[in-house]
Length: 280
Image 1 (cartoon, rainbow, N blue to C red):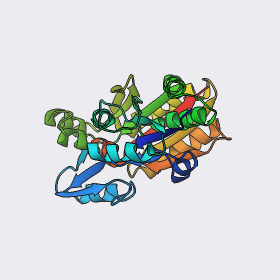
Image 2 (cartoon, rainbow, N blue to C red; image 1 turned 30 degrees about the vertical axis):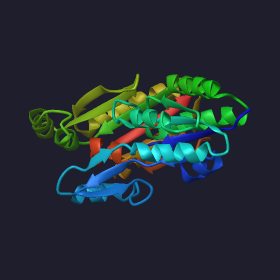
Image 3 (tube, rainbow, N blue to C red; image 1 turned 90 degrees about the vertical axis):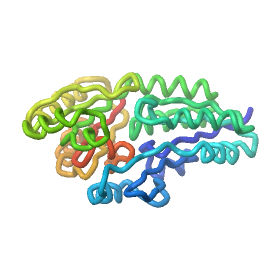
Image 4 (spheres, one colour; image 1 turned 45 degrees about the horizontal axis):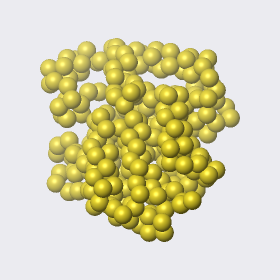
């Protein structure tokens, strides 16, 4: 039986320890800031990006990895006869899955490309569980079945502090953005079925806190939580409030807190805060 290796794009919210432990190959996305291209995990970090975005003359532009980067990763992973499971972020926010699929047709390595319909720590939960299945002798199909199961039991909520980046990126109209700024509208988004949906909106942080409390109540009274993460874009004040409440619900679980990746931060803007978890 050939060995199976996992390749993932850099939007996966994996820690360096997890990447090493499960031998994950990361293919980086890139971001252009004022004409200069930066490569995630190579020439720019998640922690550096918010300040660079804040000081940029215009909204940064993100792009999926070049097809050649995936081909190189697949060739290298398959050099010893291994097959590859390539996990990418959801297609609704990036064309990464399509680049990986094209690369899979150009390599001699046997590659299965899977759109995990999530990103960040939600993507990491799936990859880690898939890696465990593979370590136990499972097939690529077994690993994908496990990822689908984790996805069905996952939640991803994202609070947006302001809509400026969504306006600049053409995601919403300038009028809607100006109106929301005037009325101090905050938005809570939820990711499901591989798409971003508006869960709620209201005036001021009080509305967001009320929505977080409702989400946390659902979390506390639902199935046992197996993994949890909080990602943000320079949103530490909100993170600390959220982390304290989550820790009270899941005192035995480590909470991975991290600045999110540039492709997410570009859309959400500064102050965004995201809760991701999965259950039994």
